[in-house]
Image 1 (tube, rainbow, N blue to C red):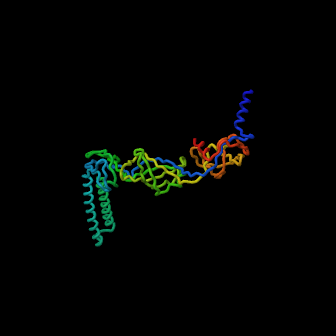
Image 2: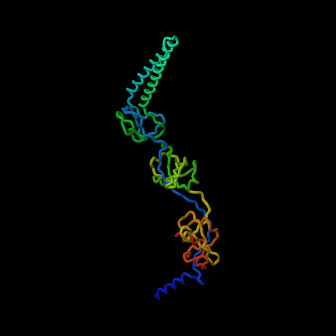
Image 3: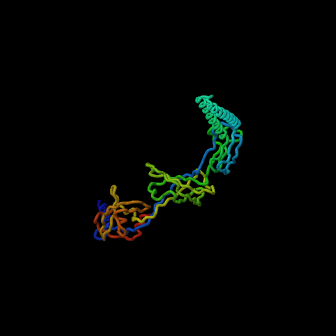
Length: 342
């Protein structure tokens, strides 16, 4: 028991300073300029992309494409057997000419009262139906030729001349990669610093030393209620075609610099949901409630409760109470911040 009492007295004497004052380390509150950063992750996409497929079951008679080549909008890519469809078109056109002739004769007869109005209406209906049949037959003929819907690069070919393809079967792919779309999500707190048309830089692990420049094209109209983030689409210049759809990319975003009050995190005295800090008034420690904001490694922003130049306790606060006397073991503007950083 005596040993314990001796240990207690020794501990008490080490905590106290002269006249019972508590030994503490202090630091002056200083203003600092900070800028929050975040790294957004996204996947590269083609500016335009399409699978080249057939609308109907048919046999391939010609392929006007090579894997990896660039084609222009309107270039012929694939031709199918059109013997039957062209014959059907010719028959439809012949019928259309016949019904047109019948209608013209019917109009003459109607003027001489040799044909009733109802008969003339029937002839007109036949003529219009035959014209529709011609348009339908022409559309089927057009479907025997596939043209590039936009300029781009041909992908891998999945069929050969003479193959019978079915609707939906992918013959090849076409991608416009002169511009790359990059979709990524950012925290809602960064909505104030990202705007349409704003320039940005993106990087890819494939090219660690390269920076791909682009701009924000659009921002989603909704914030995800679960992740509290919003989707952003950027367009990256890819005229050198180094980027390919599906590549993983990163975008670093930075908020504008602001001036704040930063204190060492260890100076905070948490009590439930509130935070306090001991401010020095001469050799007396005053407990003041504070509100905190952003955090950095070892430091925290104080938004309310302190002013620049205030001296605060950064070590030894756990031994204090409001109004306690203190004795400085060490004092300076940098020591507390350095201790907090470690």
